[in-house]
Image 1 (tube, helix red, strand yellow):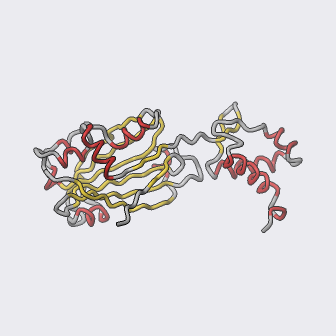
Image 2 (cartoon, one colour):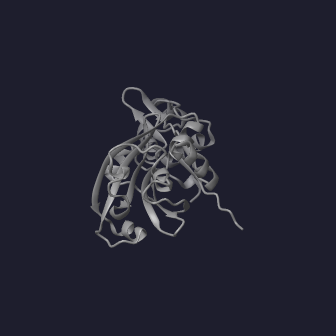
Image 3 (tube, rainbow, N blue to C red):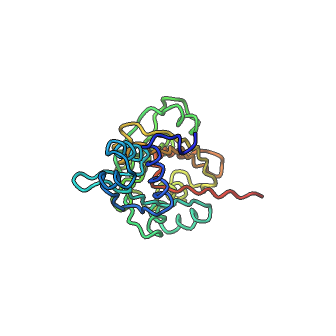
Length: 256
């Protein structure tokens, strides 16, 4: 279908989308009023309203009561994980998330939501090589940047390895769990040598959309990361839910 064959509201939406994606309309910019847009496009307010509704459902616009319609701000944080960066930050005692955010001039915060023992979900059990339903420790956290929710992360650990350790305490662990795993005096005493990530893109469920302030039309990335130590054992599984509108993923793949 050519542009001239599209319904008028679609042509208006496509034009505004192009202005947003090209940067002609920047995040936070206020759009003209419906009356002004109606006159600009020589159409009706009903048509303009349908075009704006489409762009809101695409996650490009937001309405503010009594103020108007704005290009939705997109505060991106680029999470770059390489072996060298992981090792360098492990030595400082600063988590990778906090270090990445701070390096980009942003203010990171982590909140521990809960720590409990639960039966292992099947996909977690298979990665930890235990039976489904075996008890695991789960640490549920929320990550924020400049007070905006950025991701929800559930970390899973076997009771056999981590019972009675700081993993079960409702507090942050200096340097993150990886520091505890590699601590010569800790429960594992081995270096982390590999991360394996499974990435799934889907629409958020209502609870995720509310907790992460995800607007309509914006997908969610779910990342399941397994941390493997020197003897080949998986000692941590992280289940992260990340809004796709405020993250940039970079994967560095070394090819021998």
